[in-house]
Image (cartoon, rainbow, N blue to C red; front, top):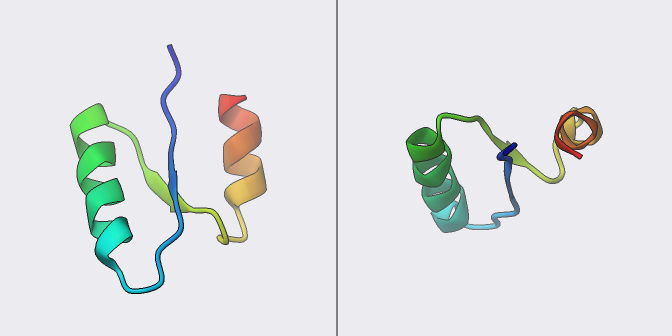
Amino acid sequence: MKTAVRYYSRSGNTKAVAEAIAQAAGVKAVPVDSPDAAAFAEKYL
């Protein structure tokens, strides 16, 4: 099973939670508005 953690955060709270989840899952958390978000999605879809 492939796991991806993507998030959108205005204040930073969601980012902190996403990074904690990603760390527990052993993957990288990537913001949805990141320039490399499309490449990240293609890797996991």
